[in-house]
Structure formats: structure tokens, C-alpha cells
Image 1 (spheres, rainbow, N blue to C red):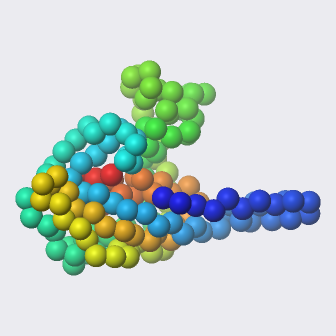
Image 2: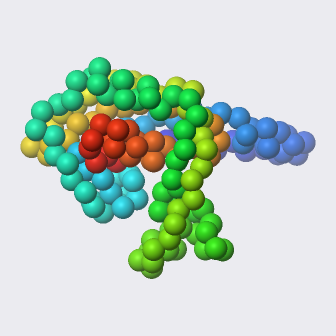
Length: 155
């Protein structure tokens, strides 16, 4: 995923709170068929659910629409969220169990933006998406939750 980092100088810094509380638009890609420790392509693969045939685009689109509205997400284990004064990624790196907090989020839009690509050899199916979401929404987790909804591991 790519992003934009807004910078504010002088009196414009007063607008930072308003910018941060507004909705955000993300673009990214989902790969169905495997999951990683970090919920993105940088982590180690921890689960595989190889596809033997591609899912229909209509089935993916319908599953994506079920996330539009108010949702509850569990914070990713590899995130900076604090639990008992420590960041979740510190628990993850130490291999220590921790109960991850839930967060309320709002998804205004979650749509596929391109055709799906099926890789029969790897047993994966990938596609790009656009998501318009509230502050605090975990996009990685949205992808993982979509996979779960489809009965597959996802990153």
C-alpha cells in the first residue's frame, strides 16, 4: 500500500486534528489462499488454504459489501496498540500471549478495483481494492476478515 503524509507548518497545524479525524481512502491488494503473522506480505506464512479453482468475482464483491457500515475489528498482533503499557508487536516478538483489543470502525466503501488473478500453481487469487474508512480502521485486518468471510486465509 502507498500513502500520503500531510505536513502542516505554522498556523496550519491547527487543522491536524480535523485531518486526522476525517475519513481515509486506501488502495491495496488482497491475496486469498494464505495468511501471515503480520497480516501483510512481509510476515511469515502461518496458514494456507489453497484454492483449487478461482472464486467468482460476484462472490468476492458480495462478501466485500458485508463490511460496509459499522464493524468491530481486533487489533493486529503486529501493531503499535498498547496493552498494559506495552505495544502489541512487543508481545508478538517475545512470543507472549496477549488479549488484543477490539476497535469500532466505519467502512463507507470497500470495492474491488480490478479483475482477479488466479494462480493455480500457488493456489491463490489476488485483486486490488479501494476502501473508504474511518480513522482507526486496520486495512490489513479488513483483508484478513474478508478472507475469513470467504472461508479462506488471506493477506
